[in-house]
Image (cartoon, rainbow, N blue to C red; front, top):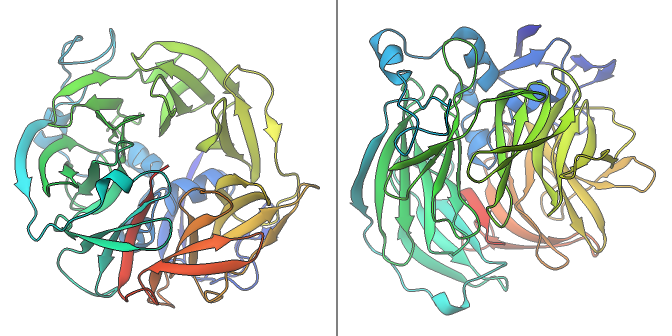
Length: 447
């Protein structure tokens, strides 16, 4: 049963009998969250925390979950809806046999960014960070793109595309992916920007949500993967693969015999040979060509949400407030936590010093160390004890790069990137804030 709940001043709102917001974190979230019956981690994740990077907090004022759109229909109705959901024939212009592709895609148009700077490209590789830096939280106009080396050296590239959010960085390091979409529009503008030259391509695709799923293909970023949210009849649009110039190459299946219909979230493995889809009844492993391989979890409707890769042979999920890693073999999951009081998990990472997770509730996120007994300990980042969001970007050596900023209540107006060594409890700011000033709207680790 779907229940939409407006979450405001929710100091006493509870999940499974426990207060949703932990002590020390802000208790206000001016956002609308869709809950699967009782307040669930999936509802929190898909409502407030669907956005994977800092832009997810900036866009909370207009956020709505993918499931809400599936229930309510499409944002813009009438003739637009009918055109958007007309289907293409199977094959190169459409998708796998029996899969319908949404119309509304337009081919690419060339774009260019001025004032492009020089970078030692031969040195750029794993551990480098791409960041979009604004002058302040309230600044208007396009931000400036920077590259940051693992040692903290900053290189100015040039202007980011105006009105667009940084979404991904190709595995080759050559291209950045941006999304621009008006919250009242069904046209998602996808921008592929070459970081070497400042030139790129913009194309559009139909989207039933302001927050579609968007990423480069793996391993090098030779294509773009896009999931445009909901359809008017209550299902989800297929994941589509586009060339870098906007030519649609494939639409992936939306329904599987055991796992059921897709539920919005997807992940591609590092080699680009397989994808995992979040579904109504579990998870489904699918080949790059769109052929179903096997159901990984068939736990019944709701309860689990796909988060990230845990290893090259397992994926991480949040299941009713617990972290479980499902092997691609289809075997039983490995339970990483056993005790959970509040909120939901958004991801977890390995380091030599232990396992660490990003937890979330009430418009805030924070970092936790996962203890061997299944419990978790909240960590305070040096120099950022008042932060409203602490988002790991990945791992590099013994460190976690963190995007640190304010929550959706705006109680702090900073946003910067730290390299954080949790084993030594040491943090070093490398972009924004104390490192040259400015407000980091988004950042991505190349890894």
